[in-house]
Amino acid sequence: MAFQAGVEPWPYTLRELLAGDKAKRTYDYDHTCALMSLIASVQTGKQYSLDYFHPYRKKQAEPMNLDDPAKAFDELTKGKG
Image (cartoon, rainbow, N blue to C red; front, side, top):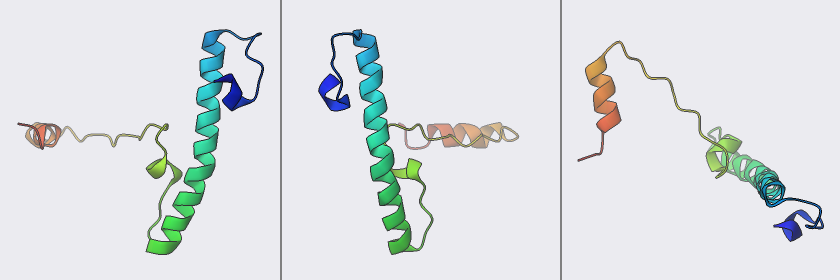
């Protein structure tokens, strides 16, 4: 973990090392996914965001419309069972 971040591990706790490792991996993926989204957008003509390719960023769920509970239930259970 410490070697990936390029720091001496001795003055840090394991929790700090894990946080630093995750921050470094997220930073590296930000760079890679920015390039991937740019290339995909140019090649396909569609607009891709960085989050589309990023494995560490959470995708924002679209808010559900609960005006029709049966439709919301069908969407939640789609593909199960």
